[in-house]
Length: 58
Image 1 (cartoon, rainbow, N blue to C red):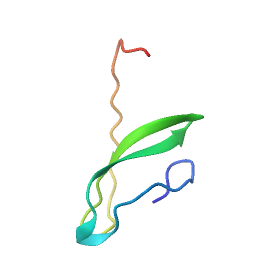
Image 2: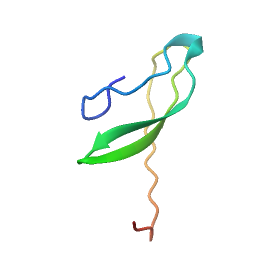
Image 3: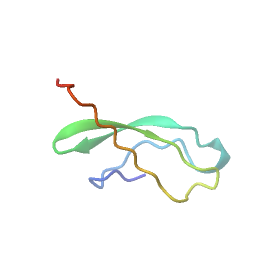
Image 4: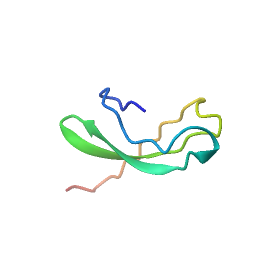
C-alpha cells in the first residue's frame, strides 16, 4: 500500500486474510496515524474520515 507521500506502509495482505490494522505514514514532516480496513476482494471504493477535535492542543 502506498501512503499519501508515496512511501510504502505495512499491509496485512489481500483477500480474506486482510485484517483491519493501525498504520502510520509521513504527513508534513510528522508521523500521522490511521486505520486501514480493506474489503475481502483486496480493492474497492475508499472512504477518508478526518476527525476534528476542537480545543485539543499538544
